[in-house]
Amino acid sequence: MLTRTGIAVSPGVAISPAMLFGSQGFRIPQRFVSVDAVDSEVSRFRASVETVCIALDENERVAREQLGEQYAAIFSAHRMMLRDTKLNGEIETLIRTKCFSPEFASSRVLRNYAKVLQNLGNTYLAERAADVFDLEKRLLKALLGEQRPELSHLTEPVVVLAHNLTPGETANLNRQFVKGFATEAGGRTSHTAILAGALEIPAVVGIGKFLADVSPGDVVIIDGNRGEVIIDPDEPTIARYRDSARLQESEAERLAAFNSIEARTRDGVRIQVLGNIEFPHEVQHCVTRGADGVGLYRTEFLYLGSDHEPTEEEHYDAYCRVVREMGNHPVVIRTLDLGADKIPGDFEEFRTKADNPALGLRSIRLSLRHLGQFKTQLRAILRAAVHGDVRIMFPLVTTLLELRKARMILADVVEDLEEEGLEFKKEIPVGMMVEVPAAALLAHHFSREVDFFSIGTNDLIQYALAVDRAEPSVASLYRAGDPSILRLIQMVIEAGQSAGIPVTVCGQMSSDPKFVPLLLGLGIRSVSVTPISLPEVKDVIRNISIEDADRLASHSLSLDIARDVENFLRTELNRLCPSRLSDMPLTQ
Ligand code: PEP
Ligand code: MG
Image (cartoon, rainbow, N blue to C red; front, side, top):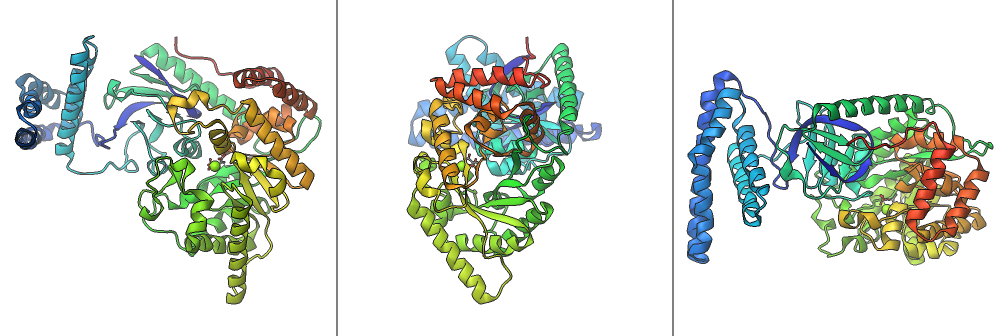
């Protein structure tokens, strides 16, 4: 049994066999074959060994010609390893006696060899494990052909383990069978993490290297509450986690009582609690949990899984679905926030070669360069707006000029629609995300030119603290409780209050229960959270008074270290909301 720790990004516990989704993207489609098929499967295995050996011969020849004998020797060593009678015997025995598929048997045996080499305590031999993994990949490739793994075509429950999953791969996970996922890469507010929340499956990211320790089919526990991944757990551990999963379920049942209750503080102040969505179907999660509306619709996810640029009608249909299902409640549609880690793979024109894409051509900057695409989206939003209470929001606004340009394009679109005589809503509120420190510093100026602010703490923290939100090696430096972040939020709220415009917080910070009292104390009266967090956030709000919140905020502002702020808020949350399920470690 081996426990690895990463960043918990989507709550819940999953216990299932592992499906490895490596950087080469091979998955083992089936673990068992029928008894009748054993002979033909052994032949298939032998043929694949031959295929790999032929490729290795070719690699050896090219290496000898171009690089010299010592490089060619690498490939002849690989070939010898693959022809080793003991190794082949072990694999064939598993196929014959256990009816393992050749893919599963090969992966099992080769990974066991690799593990032994890694654990011999000799650096040279440990490095040879990489050769064994290389052979595994070659053999799987020969067995599986060039097939790309189809994460959406699973037939049995698994937990997916990967070096990284792109937002597109995450979006395509089949929720019926993928019970959870864990990745070596990724940070707390990476878009893959946000999508895990949207899919409502337990997930842990940023674990660092661990895939070599797992074989396909090993039982793995993913604890998305504590950020732990337990490989090959023993029975007592499985039992503890099953108990924990049951506790979580009863906590979810307790919280379900808040679905139909509005968020009001103990002293009667009504707080607007909205939902963040990425896909139209999530609007149902918001409705079921009694959200006051959609505070952030991340429309860029329309591109995921699509092989073409969405048409105006596709934008329109998606928005209409959300707006209609939300009834009279507000729906804030954010214009495309493409770029950084949200570049759709198939859309070459949006792919930038920048070394630092988070600071590059992304989001509103990209929309202002691709006016056709921007206008298409704005037309669809204005047309969908006739069906409900729609508001437009621009992401990543950094300068006033940028905001003014975006508003000018919007005015052009209004004119076009008027000329065309199409049905649309002319006057709709226009707001902006405050997620760049420059915009927070100039919030007073911006507040005169927009109808609302929404603070995007995910990016605000990344840019203010110079910490990549998706980079696990600096995850411990990514702190919402940093005093500088508190001050930036305070500035935006003050600017909003003096201009008389609403200010919402829609970054992940507002889905974290410990920060909710702080945000209320800073003056926030509207939050937009991951749908799964709606009941929990309402529960916290109903347990505190504005007086408590003010006291917490002013004490937090007197502290000068993020860790102290967060510890203080955690302690206060447990004191004010004693009925919440606390997060106790489960491994021993
Ligand atoms: C944010 O940056 O806080 C935000 C809500 O936007 P996104 O996570 O989509 O960048
Ligand atoms: Mg953002």
